[in-house]
Length: 320
Image (cartoon, rainbow, N blue to C red; front, side, top):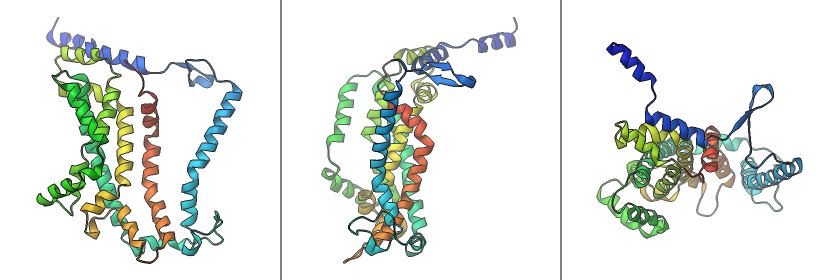
């Protein structure tokens, strides 16, 4: 047999790592059955849901959804009112006159576009870094064996219990000595690593059998290649969950930018909205209009990643 023929034959034979990946994928994929019209139907492990139980579930979910949306609906309603009508008693859910001018004034009274760009830059950058560092550190804590691994992990996770106010001043002194105050880099460096992200990713990594990593090592892959080529593709739901939570947390962060950013050109949208709060009064209608605008990116991010987010939450308790 020629060398080229041997190469083609060997390329068609799956490696032990590829076989292990296929077995893990089949194990974590819920069973499906063909339905009407050739569609695939998910099968519950404990049998079908009765019609009465299904109705009760839908009613409960509808009520809970309505309760959750009450503050958001009030915010949208208040953004279309005059300032003196925002806190009227009883609450007037539908304005007598829709003041659409609030959404025009929000862009002319403050540099709203600049604030949104700053928030987007910080949120995207910090999210990418936290997903990268969190998943990489979680791989070391879950798939690699070294002396003191569990003790180090517990010590690192214990930092979650320490309130941020306890080390807020030392952090500021460090950033000031480094000349990074009033720069976006200070916030990025402080939030590029997160113990919660490491904990979340490690718990998901534990659902992946160790035999998968062992098979990859037999095939000659190093730890970096195993993490990048094998582990990460299997953890898309967890990555999406961590990315969504980090993005929302960074976007809504107020204290961090408030402490480190003094220049108006560097402010985020959360800091920009405080421009409407005066010494004796506040323009609440414009604040609500700006809040509605600031919520739109979060809603879009969630709609784009909800499938992976829900899958990550649903499979977080599975064991390999």
